[in-house]
Amino acid sequence: MKRYVLILVVVLFGAYAKAQTLNEVYGQSVKAYEAKDYKSFLALTLKLDSLRPSHPTFTYNLAAAHALNGSVEEANLYLEKLVLTNNKTEFEKDADFKSLETTAAYKKTLLLKAELEKEIKNSKKVISLSEKDLHPEGLLFLEKSKTWLATSIRKRKIVSFNPKTGKCTDWLTGKNILAVFSIKADKDEKYLWAATGALPEMEKYSKALKGKAEILQIDIKTKAIVKRFSVGGEHLFGDLVVAKNNVVYSTDSEKPIVYKIEKDTITEWLSLNGEALSLQGIALNTENTKLFVADYLSGIVAVDIKNNADRSWLEFPKGSTKKGIDGLTYYDNSLIAIHNGVQPIRIVQYKLDKNQKQLTGFTTLDNNRPEFNEPVLSMLKGNKLYFFANSPWKFYSKEFALDLSKFQNPMLFSHDLKGKI
Image 1 (cartoon, rainbow, N blue to C red):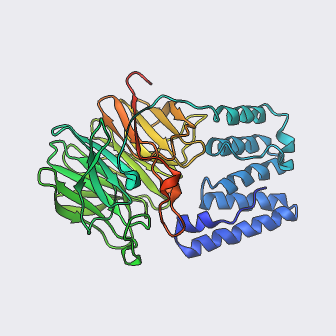
Image 2: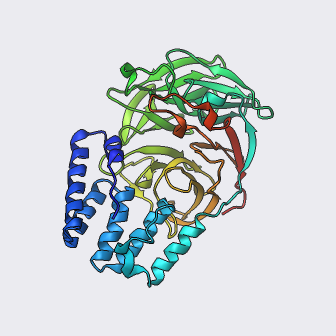
Image 3: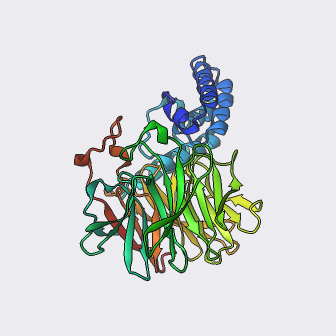
């Protein structure tokens, strides 16, 4: 059994009462385990998993609880799930799993653990950017002006960069701009749309900015902010897409809500309360009939644009995991997901069925690469996928100072997707 202080739960949920309940139930589960009341241990851990899915401690303990209750098949299933999210977990010497060691499923999980350690190197480095402390997130190529743009979390701006030398030039700056996450242009490249939010990692952050978030509409020709869109309360606009009809859809990572901007008005388009916990990437299919939204824990939901009540959470193929998806890009009836909330980090292309309601298979494009620390959002240019491989989220101090000695300049990578799946 794993015993951890559940700081992650408190941070993720935000609501003190719910986090407190989780800690209380977790404490009860520990006492049941220590008393060898394994039936209660299983029941309590199942409750924890329902409240906070895919937490590594709860997944580990569910595998142990099932094993201790003689549910060998279920125990092996949870062990496989655990390894797919973190292949560094050491469970082999845990006596709780003694009953599983002779089973074929357990031996397959050990092979899977070793398999995930292998490096898969398909994407290639294109260039390093000149600004080391930029902390890029979003990326865009403007076809009309042949301009490459990158957003900055740390510097609260958008830069253009030379694709041959990596030299950065400020494209949009200003004291009233927050950390910039995703950027997208409309089909005519008249306006640039930017998803922003306040984070302690950005320069000149103050507590007064906590929970502030805006979607910016920017005139590409003049580089002037035409309009700012915001909603009351605490929010974080992490990603967005612009449909062919110029309607904008954006995910809120603070609350599981998708917002829509249409006719100069921002409204709540879809609430996923009770279904999702931390919305991330968002993508539209080619026909603009279906929206795909990634949640860091719950996977990917496919939503009908004309009727958002018509939605379904996609079931992931055997041997893959729904956890830890950040960037999400649609390409040729498939979804490319950047899994940076798992170990090892990997980029996976998931094939959709003809109705785009199921995932029918997957190909791992990159896996366990030392350069990937950590990729976030991605974009398409023709058949090529582009992304920054090393956003420095892990290299901030407790006071949110960025240690430049611990990482390299931002590295742009690309991957030719043509004929891959």
